[in-house]
Every structure is written in structure tokens, then in C-alpha cells.
Amino acid sequence: MNPLLDPAAKLVIAHRGNSAFCPENTLASFGRGMTLGADALEFDVRVSRDGHAVVIHDATLERTTDGSGRVDACALAELQRLDAGYHFTRDAGRTFPFRGQGITIPTLEQALATFPGVPVILEIKTRNASAAVKRVLTAAGAMGRVLVASFDDSALAPFRGTGFTHSASRRELVKLYARALLPGMPSRLPFMALAIPPSFWGIPIPVQRFARMARHSGLATHVWTVDDPARAREYLAGAVNGIITNDPETIIAR
Image (cartoon, rainbow, N blue to C red; front, side, top):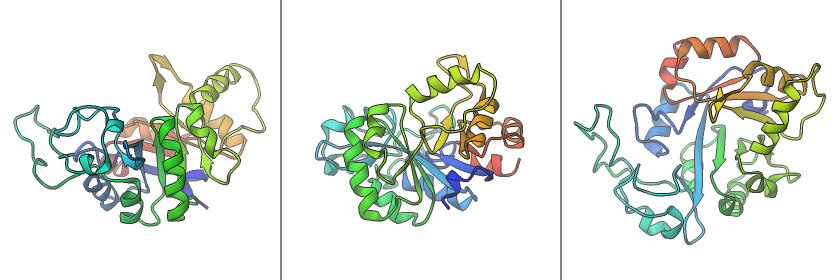
């Protein structure tokens, strides 16, 4: 069983890798997260101009690379010439220890091949990436270890009823929020797992109530992004199954 779907699991999931200490969404960050003992990875996927699934969070390149412009306006070869460690700093810009180290924007194929067998929460950032993601996961035989996630219901639509596992969309979470205000528990939910934040647009999410509803339906719940070990202990003592964190070492040592 994919541990990300196990309602009895207690997991530490590296958010964009060990992103508190390494450039996010890079192979270096993923590798460090797994070396520290994370149980799974979480990362973001968009699509290049020429149809390749690439691992990057933002729609544009400025925050995390030495490039500029939109990700989907660049071909893969252009994206992989960029320095994905260029802007990473832990001392307010006094030093940039990952510049010039050959850290690039990885493709989804590269990420899956570099960490074979590792469970992954894969966040699709745009519906235009769904076809490429589906194609890569199928070719890599990774359907059994990847939980597809997206706030965009249309990005998840190609995965529904196809054998892929997926979490709840924003629309489904809104419906679940309304259901959480009522007594009792739903016996069935239209997704395979929950990935939720403690709050959304300033509105607190009843995390443990959501997690109990999911568990009642036999589903797992993962919470992002949690870097406070006390908060992680509180969640895991309840019905939460996974902590998605920028700092897996601290959460593992909780």
C-alpha cells in the first residue's frame, strides 16, 4: 500500500524537499530530505512550452532562478540552462551558497528516476500540466507511489476514475468545510486523501475535524506546511497521518 494512503500512518513529508536549507524543488533538496529520513516527498509541477513536466512552484522564474519570464513560455532546454540555486540564502542575502553549483530545474522524469520507490505528493499547479504529468507517471510506472494533488478541480479531472490516486480539490474542500459544521461523519468521500493547510486565505481550517472525517471514510490526511514540532506532535496525536514540512530534520526529531 502507498503509505500516503494509509489512514494509520504517521509520516514526515519533505515539502519541496529540505527546502528550509536547500533550494526548493531541486534534486539537491529532495536528496537532502530523504537522507534526513523523510518518509515521502512533496513537490510542484508545471509544463514547459514544449510539453515537458517540470518541477517548479511559481508560474514565473524570477524568485527561484537567475531567469525571468513565464515557465510555460520557455522550452525545456532553456529552463535547464538556468541556475535553480541562484537566489537561495539563509542569511538575508549576505551569501548565496548554492549559486553556480549546477542545480537546475528538474523534469518530473528526473525526479522520479532519481528517487525510485519514494512516495510522492505531486501538486499540479496548472491544468495545462495534467496531460504531461499523466503521461510521465504512466511511462514511469509510478502510479502506485504518487498521490496527485491540485486545488484546481479541472487539473484533477483527467485522473479521476483512471486508477490514479488523487487528493481533494479546492471545490471539494469547501464542500467538506460545510459538512464539518454538521454532526456525524460522511461514510464516503469523492477523493483518496486530504492535503490541507491549517488555514486558507486567513480562514482557520478545522484540521482534526477534517482528519477524523477522512479517517471515518478510510482516508489519510496530510497537513501543510508545518515546521513547528509542537504543532506536528499535536496533529499526529490526533487523526492526522502526515506532516508536510520545509524542515524534516526538526519534525523527525520532535
